[in-house]
Amino acid sequence: MIRTILAVDDSASIRQMVAFTLKGAGYEVLEATDGQDGLDKAKGRQVSLVLTDQNMPRMDGLTLIRSLRGMPEYRNVPILVLTTESGQDMKARGKAAGATGWLVKPFDPRRLVDVVKKIIG
Amino acid sequence: MESVTAAEAKSHMQLDRIESTFVKHSSECSQQLSAAEGELGRLQTLLDDAMGQMAEAFGRLAPGAAGTDDGASDVVVTTLQYQDICSQLVAHLRERLARTGALVEGLHIPFEAAMAATRGDPTTIALASSRVNNMEAMLADTQRATSSGPVQQAQVGCGDVELF
Image (cartoon, rainbow over all chains, first blue to last red; front, side):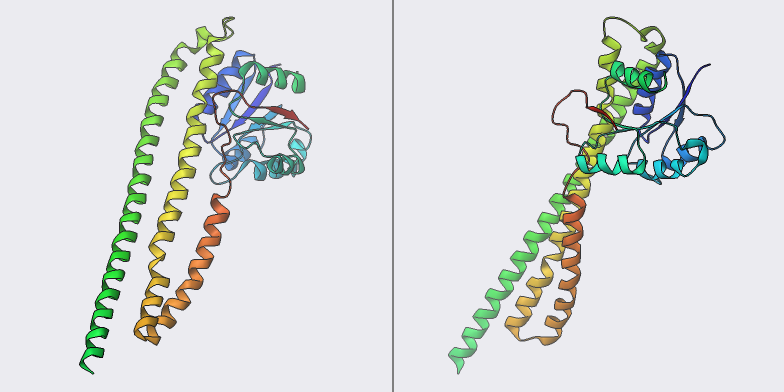
């Protein structure tokens, strides 16, 4: 069964790079342009992992995580934050919101695939 | 008596010159900051266009590039991400410039108050004094908004991974 990853980022180039990397590793990638779009697309779908940016218009990454964690079907779905933010305070806030991990941009394609495989196989 | 009047007239002329010089300089600062903000906007557009074209070309090459062992596609994937990183940095710079411009524009308020005090104009002093309170709030807001940028990267390289 092909696993679906929801990639949420307001940057089209980042979404393109994430999709290229993860599709190349055999995953299906569902793209969303911001937190609100990500939340809308997550509803009613079976997603294996969510990869989200932090700073986005309409709804940021941490708000998205809190919203998803409030949905029973996303309580245990791994959520990775992929962001330029690297401060310990932001990471702590991400962890408190329910993030599974924190990746600082730019991501190393092979390392991203390794992390995703480690989490969802 | 005449000599006092002449001294006052000279003093007023000097104050007028100080005021006009201050207004001219603060106006020039605002215009320079506004121009810099506009130039950064053009830089952003150029960067977006260039990287967009590169990403589009990469998209056409991508199916054949996936999984190549030489790591070339990895380098492209990493490099193209700098469009987003540079965009955030430019946006933060523009925000900083716009807020600094607004602060510079507000500098004339306490200056006007000082000038009014010198001339003994209580109405202008009271008006400027109330507007100074708004300036304090604007300054605090600017310091809070620009205290730390979203981008810490200083060179091209991949970021850390931390699993909780």
